[in-house]
Amino acid sequence: MRELIERAASDLVNSTYAIALTGAGISTESGIPDFRGPDGIWTKNPRAEAEAYEHYGQLRKDPRAHWEEILTPGSIISLFDKFPDYPANRGHIALAELEQIGILKAVITQNADSLHQKAGSLNVIEYHGSMAKLRCMDCGARFPRRDFDLQKMQKQKELPPRCRKCGGVLKYDGVYFGEPIPEDVSRAGLEEARKCDLMLVCGTSAVVYPFAELPRIARQRAGVTIIEVNGEPTPLTDEGVSDYLVQGRIGEVLPAIVDEVKRLKGTAGATLR
Image 1 (cartoon, rainbow, N blue to C red):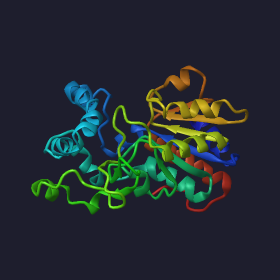
Image 2 (spheres, rainbow, N blue to C red):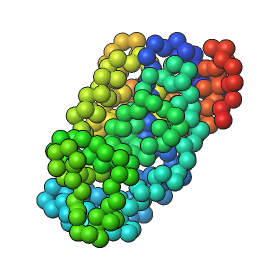
Image 3 (cartoon, helix red, strand yellow):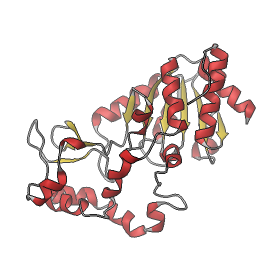
């Protein structure tokens, strides 16, 4: 593994526009459960997964009833209210440090937990949205979730919450099954994939589309290096989309890569906090 860590660090140092793609695997090390893993929420409760596939249709049909349902204690959405309690881990911090060094230009994440921002990353594209925000279904405006007392609105029969710009119905910014990726996010992700010369893919199984298409789009261009950091091989590994896989715990591998990057660049303070 040491040889691959040194290779990844060298590739990062020699890149001109490196980006990272991240999935649930980087956040499980913060204690956030995944959905389809061996101990995943939906693995243990298949009914919850089936209900999740119905949420977008319910929202469009009856926004008030949808909001009443998801604000019920124990609902799948209520689990996301705990996201602020989870800490950013060493994998998140490593990516933030790569950005601070000037190597990493953007993080595109499937995760809706805002842990990259908590770690200090500034240019984060939340491909599947953020559960810390609400988004208007009409004009696309986003608002901090904390600006709305949803429980109070529920008690006062004021659901669904409404957009402060156009009056449209608000939903959680997190993208539901069957809901298109917001146009601004889709466009930003494509732009990054098309101009990067190095893509660091961390903690994603690369099976959920259209997110999983981004490494394949980058692969179409000559001279692009795609590095996987994952606990297990993925379709990107098997199909030869990635150049190589550094297999291991993300919270251990990424800090080791950053330390080597700092050594190569002669940067002081090479130890991650």
